[in-house]
Length: 280
Length: 280
Image (cartoon, rainbow over all chains, first blue to last red; front, side, top):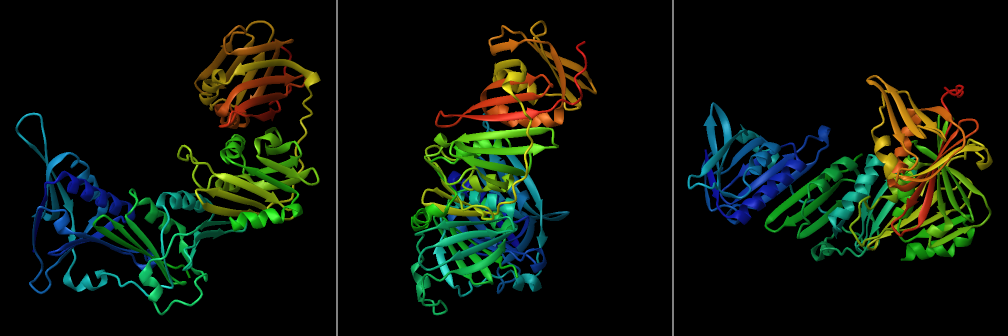
């Protein structure tokens, strides 16, 4: 098992830092999957702790100038590591304006992801900051729980509105209720609803548009105005929204009635899939 | 917006309808009296009075006169109901409490009458939120019988003069003692805390003093825990009128200028902590 990679481009470095900040907001601990072409940040919560899952994918070519890896074996050419996501984002904080960033898998008394950052300095000698992030190598037999989630056949697929508006709405709603109802139809309407003994609040988003490919889905019913709804834990949804610091280039919400809501976001060349299961 | 139109058609059924281009002109004033969960609302042709009370010793009233609203209709007055103020404020600020410049949230408010919920329709950038807040049996509010003919001492101060004093009140003191007198020290705020007593004097010819009408020396004590919440109104206000009557009751009137330059008033009444001692 070997892994070493290097970023020298400032834009790539910033982008990578942003991704790692987003991951830190979305998941406390996550799995990092390293394969010859991709890096993935994976979260797959136990049902008991909410059952949220996440699959974030970066194409390594778009970020790294050098990228070498050797997986556990030739036929399973991948590495799965578990790490505390904040450790990575904290390490990358020092990387602002850095000249280069190197990440490698090391073993210093315990397995580590070593992040070394070459910083510019006034004098000609450069300074190097090194962070050793403790990791756990995930054995082959547990990989099956960490596969790319299949997107379920959804009842409604809809483009999301500006996430910032959604976030402020959901933040207020959270003060009133723990339960959020997300509903949408194929006319481009999306509603966020809470209902409590004291108050019912519904926010209506209109004319959002539906992604074209979804309308061909056979499982959808004929009436485009019919709402598909899903009840979710409002804190999980807010956590997802809080993680989005930059508005994504594309954001889609897929609802499987009373089962799951799936968010599919694209930030330039990073894709993020986030699943929140329905509350029973 | 069909939702809004539908509402307008049914307008005659409502005992109260009001609309406002900038919801913050209402929410800011209500925040100034938000020190208890519940409030009682009284609407007449002149506007809405919202009352919050605590411990049968303090009462805060916010007056939002009809002129603040772009439209204001009351069918049979007075319209009275009790409402959860925390929930109302969460609803009013559903699109965020610090909006971007130039973006306003519009409000339409309807109340059908006794037993019906208060309906709020908020709109920002084409997104509509509908809130249905259940109302409660109105409670009898206190009558402080504070009559201007019984006023002994009256001072009008620029709020900035009191702001610092109130935000730094020694909360280990149980009471705030207010001395008002035609002679020295004219206007004095005193606390008696764990770390000792403190006295803050305002000379009568201070620039902050807009008017000074004290006829008789009065020394009264008020529970600091009851007065502290009025800081919320003080922070927003430009002027404050401080009056005491012959029983030692205190009236604080705050003049608040909203974002459109209109003036609103918030008033606090507080009864003295003990029977005023003979002047010392």
